[in-house]
View (cartoon, rainbow, N blue to C red):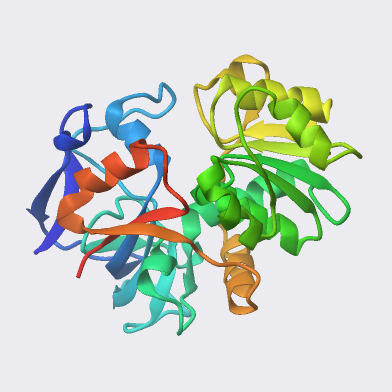
Length: 303
């Protein structure tokens, strides 16, 4: 048997329940991962609450799109992974003791990477990589990241810096030192945002990522960048979309995960874990994320 977090109706975090389920058996082209850590995404909290018109639950519904753990069973026609391999990557239903995964959605976990960090890398990391490709951010560009201290934001700051871009990140003042440590120039959000950004980027802003989902972030991005094609949001059903800013999301690929692991192993990327919770406190983890003061990632641990 195995544990999994399930909900039967939309609602507040208390709709989440930990239940006993049969451990899944991997089919052709699949492996089973004994989960050690699972990242908690803002998507998860919005999905649980029924806030996403474009993503509807099929009850009973599970949650979790990123995990780290140990391969403990291998299905037919799988090459390159074996029982005992430590991996991280993208899954469906990752808030659980065991989950099935495709090998091309996994990467080997660096040996010295803590489980909590590994569990919070894949989803936020791949979104950051994909967004920067969509925006064509590279050396010499100046990128504006809204909610830069959050999971995707902090990843985007570091990946952009590794590509040679300058980064300006919006965050509350208490997170400014954190953003500076990641290589970004911090600015406070709120009234006067456009003027503050122009003061630290007199040559202008080339591209913007909205990870905040606020009208202020959307309007400031459009005004500062000028080119709507170089502004994107990762927040669905937000003011950004209503203002004509495209919403992007990423599917996992081996290439994306390999890039993230390489950045980590070469010291150019770190995963900031804000807080961890045991699996049976998934509801508390959701409350933490919904408080919107998270610096980095909230992660569930199964042991």
